[in-house]
Image (cartoon, rainbow, N blue to C red; front, side, top):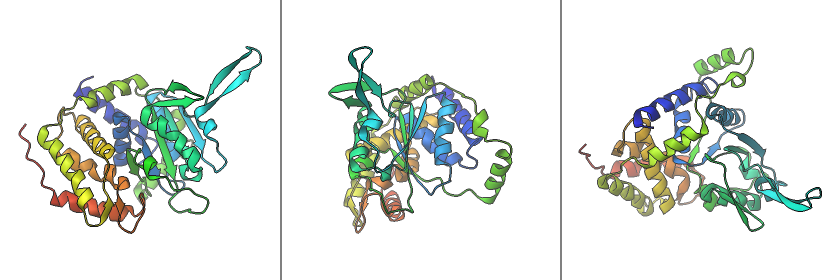
Length: 317
């Protein structure tokens, strides 16, 4: 798959998903970017804005398996990862895979589960494998976790720990549609949900090819130095107590590569880095007086200052 085919595939996927989620082309593009990088997404939004529908539309567009699990305080880690049970007919223990063994997993209201259950996702998200009773099982590829949480309700929730927040590639919000988009939505949903008739436009294997192609996008030394400078600035900023981690720096490079590839280029420009910097970094930093993942507006304000103050290289292509 060359860059022109990758750019064309992106346009087709965006058009297909937009039949179900109207007026959210920018958010859809960011989710595809995460998918191309093999990253995971945290959607923080109020109920009813289309988080579940978006994940289902993505799975159907890719002709991939999809599972949804509702996180609750009594959810056990074994319900995610799976268990070994004794099969009396076979007279042997057999492994029954949990919900995590799918291409696209919707972890609904992830902050309602206990820290023990939340941590069971860590290995699966980072290592692409799951260990049960000392046996390691590889995850289905491609593998994408779309986790949601409600920013309004606080009672009965367990905030995600820093280690798990950092493992999410991006933290996004869909928000309310405008009046024109809502009218279009009413027309589309009048008879039945467009999701019911949504047809796949590519296969999961195509996404694996895209991920390989994205990894080959060239990052020049000046652009790499620019990425490192941005990361260093987050660690020295007076309003930031904890800057982005080395994992976040790698994520910023990967996102920049995917952004370039989606625009049909095989090299990264400083503008690619700038366009993904806020979405990649905002949930990874801790501002003074706040906890990680809180005060997103303050975090984005600090990161915007860093973008203005950090000189970008002039690329000679």
